[in-house]
Length: 228
Image (cartoon, rainbow, N blue to C red; front, side, top):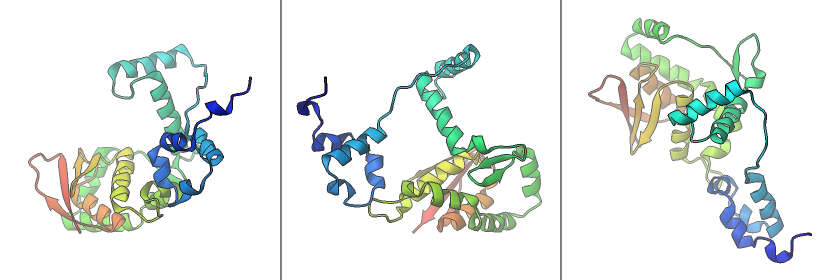
């Protein structure tokens, strides 16, 4: 039997159910101008759907080990969903014998020892200047602009600097630069892949910020203070 009108969610209920990240990504006034039917379609498009998949026992066993370790995810479903998301975000389906591609940009694996050898031939000032140059030409800037533009904008469509910094650090962390986070007016990098002067120059150029190095007791930590 078809559902009765009484079982349909009200406009107010639908507004509460739509995730905040979806609301924030919409231009100002969009939700207010939508009728109940439009809100219902938007809500349904954000709902997770249950699907059934067949996997080999070997893969399931490896997933279960990750769940038991508690590092990669809390459940099979979470790990599998994350794996699919990374497959799409890193455009794994576009990889070929020519290399690994992230969106339209080609990437290559490089050992940390080889990178350290390269940077050891440069003075800290030269490392910083190289970082400035790299940040001004960073492919990541195009990736964020073309594919994740909504992540860094307010509901009014303006760039939110706080979001841009946090999202950029998250993307660089995914790319293996180290554990990166913003804490107050500090950018903190743990176990960095690149030397501090290079990272400072890169972030200053990439984000349009002025950063001041802050002394740390642990060599594996880098702290940079943001100046307005």
